[in-house]
Image (cartoon, rainbow, N blue to C red):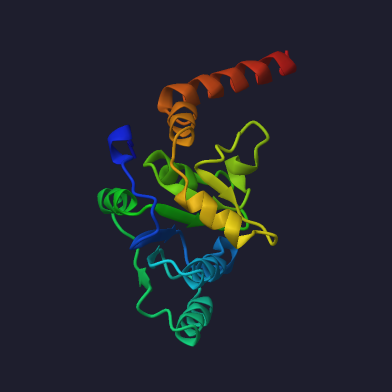
Length: 194
């Protein structure tokens, strides 16, 4: 996917706000935890909608999610849709202000990087590349969610203007930079072997 800065115009006012979860609907992807976090945000008084996009790979887990949605009267606030072609997915990224990515394990974690590169603010767990000590989380674009996540800090993050983060993500994850980093790793590994 190619993302450019013209995708990055967002209103962070939390009025009719759109949130997005993207990934397989499976326990290790943290889909239910993302919906629970969304409920906390809405319960704080914000008008919002959440779209969950993903392959329904665990039907028992999907049933548990649907029960949670019904038990908490979220039917009008949460939509679950099937995976989309890349072009449609980019359009969805463009039309949402916030991404939620609470996966428990990732080898890389491309989804939050894709979200961030389109100008979305992302609520994340530190997994995949996001757990790499070389990845400096731009505090205005990524909010690390853990068991101590304070709702006041979270809503302050959500309404803060996006300034630094987008530039960091576009710089660090553009194709030229990624290739340069891979070349450095390759040269370093050759020098170790030699």
